[in-house]
Length: 80
Image (cartoon, rainbow, N blue to C red):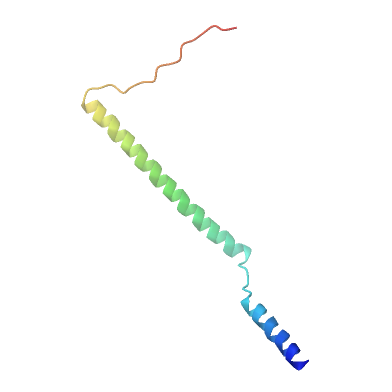
């Protein structure tokens, strides 16, 4: 009887010792805020690289004397 009570007490101690306090709202909010800010900076960096590459291609095209290819509009139809 004593051994079973002692065993249950030890099991309870082990289970309670394994529990960790969950971070509070402010801590979670700050972490999410940092993660989103890092993603935003990454997106901004990628966008700037793409814009720089497009500008460089436009400059190179202008130096070669070739006009930029303009998209042709779709033909107008009078379907009623």
